[in-house]
Image (tube, rainbow, N blue to C red):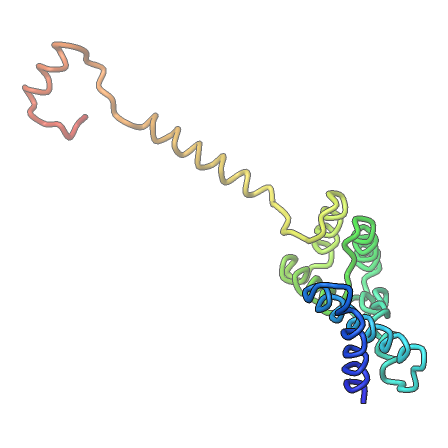
Length: 186
């Protein structure tokens, strides 16, 4: 029925417009009028919303996740709960809020993995992210990583000190090498 109305409307409009416009203009006007008619139909349906499913779908899209409920389900540690709420608030302030429960669950899983399920480490990770306004969490760098590099440089220095270098110079060195015919000592 709707398509028949649109077709008749377009035929009438086309017969009137043919007198005044080019064919390309008529096609564009017909296309725009059809689109406008469809938009008006959608608006009328929305006003006369008798189907409860359509109306309830709009409400579902606007609903937000309950962050506090999800955090409390994740942990009972008060310090960790406070750190997670602070992290959530910081994310909202940088306009990167958690939009789904799934995103929050992924954060919890990553936090467990990075911390080895240690609540104190979780709090430290979250505080570091809050302090730097990071929208994600990262593994803490330990002091051991700096010590390892110092140990490696010290090993290289010790190796250079232990290398047996000859104290002879010039002709004396040449005569010693030729006399011994042994390069393994140097």
